[in-house]
Image 1: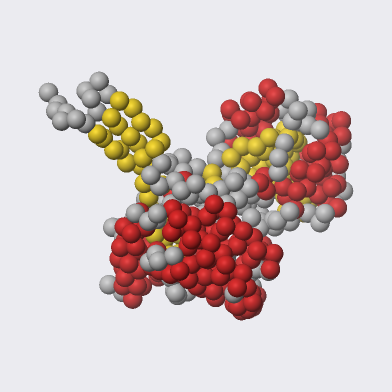
Image 2: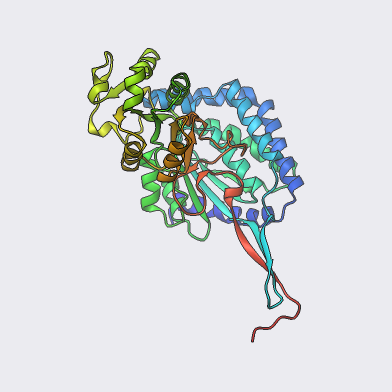
Length: 418
């Protein structure tokens, strides 16, 4: 056993013991731990910002992209957001023990299906130090222990935030090992987590295509998949033009480095015939590089698109765009190039919207709304660990409820089977 494997084994054993205690913890104690952690975030704000400044310098030295630097950066507003997220998760109903369904059988058995924690969650993420709080909070709320392995560039920030989470646990009388952070930048720790059968029950990767591909190819532990956020926005022929201008601009430019940013704009031919290049001109005016094909490529300021620009997550002020002939052609394009993350249709036509919703199987489908709303906090979950794009168990924003499984409680009165 190498050093990384020994470290993860030690953390895993401690996490399993903590998970047993957490599964039986009262909602009040979990609530207290989260409120305590939120208080510590506010109390230690200067220390966290100082740690983040060190990480930002590390990121600059590594030559991280603007999008990655944006993910890494913390400021007072973002830390207030982390604090608010902790409080929001704390106030949510506790999912553990919830009766999902119950019924009686002719044989006299009464059967209940009840939510139960998964056990030990492993979260591997890049850049975003806020995931340390989000993942820790959601795991705790759902009665799971969690082992966090943040990006090497965010280690100092993550450690500072983790210290707040650990203090909240201590104040509530819960084991500090319920939320653990891998204290090393060594990539060998990632491989050790992926192989930790019997210690970690599920791995959740949150990062780029490279990280998710590595996890999916090497993991011997089950994975909640979250691949690329290749999000599409389709402007239908019946879209309101002013709404379309607002939504498209927001979907692309509000924050380009998040997985819910729009990466491809599809415009119906009839909309374009009536309203011209307004959507493209708005994007260009905002500083977006518009990679267009066909008729759209004739618009001054656009850049000719290549085949590789469709089905690509730019995470930058770049968007691919093309004209389509109706909703069916838009659906066909998204099926071919999408990653089943988030797609939005802008239309006033109910039948067209229904066809869009029925024809696609992405984790999140929206109508007349920016793809930037693809976020657990915006869904009322308080926070999220990620957006699951697979089809097993959890899909879309992964909150506390999605981090539970279930068990059956069966009650009889001396029942025997003949």
